[in-house]
Amino acid sequence: MGSTTNRADNRLLALLRSPAGRPIIIAHRGDSSHAPENTIEAAQLGWKSGAAAWEFDVQLTRDGVPVVLHDESLLRTTDVATRFAGDPRGRDGFRVSDFDLDEVRSLDAGSWFVAGDGGFRSSRDFGTLDRLAPESIDRFRSGTVRIPTLEEALIFTREADWLANVEIKSFPDRPPGLVEQTLQLIEATETENRVLISSFDHDDVFASDREERRFGLGILLATPLHRLADYAADLVGADTVHVSTEVLGAESVAYRRRCDAASLRVEMIRSLEARGLPTLVYTVNHQAGGLLAQHLIELGVAGLFTDDPSSWAIVADRAA
Image 1: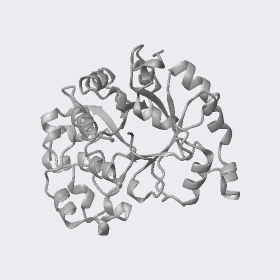
Image 2: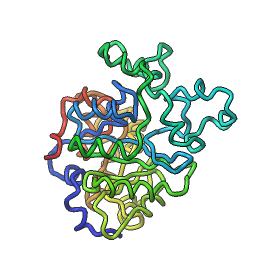
Image 3: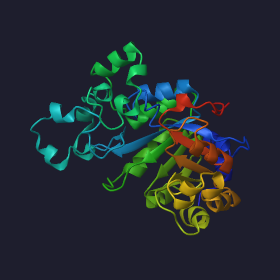
């Protein structure tokens, strides 16, 4: 397992482990309720909101370049179906792994966000369309918003003096070389001490461990695990654990009947704390003061992922 000493200067881990008494706010795919998710535009708004860090997803193009995109398909967040109408790759759902970088970079990654039909995770879906500045709407409709490369996302993070959670989206496609390319770019951009790598594929988290690494590692969970703290620390070598609100019991009978912090999985948080593992929770879009958000704060979780970081009144200071 990697040496803890080498990660002592990791700024994101330091924030998560600091006894601030409040969770840090992480902009989920950037400020994705006010700009197209996983774009530099969303990152810029997330940074301006005062969020401590941003989270984004990484996949490989067919020619092996890591790009920032959540879905395996390009359909939801680009104009690929129009630009590549009739292309046989459409029969397989326009997967990013079937397109070269120059093709991916030709796509409009902004217009969908302000489209009138209000698709999933669009501004209309979030209820923010009427609050967007006219110049922002014009920008998103211009056809010039692009899917960023991982290198561009990391360079933005460094130049903004910011922090990032890089989620490796290897499952289910598992393109060869994704982990290696991601680690190489983190080193090349000199962002090791700003970055936390996470994945639902815990084999990839384990494979990312290095004796001399300065970046953090986190596992993502969508279902509870027995002896989670021991599993995360001893078997995988993770530094953090990222769980859904459902894993913490937000949809449980107990929480519905008695809506308070004690009805959530308090023992899970405490067992992780005992092993020095900060808990990060996704995705919490309640404003500070919302019941679930307040209960998570009472539980002492270390971080909250949110699509709307600008709505939070409780925001940790950006790393010094």
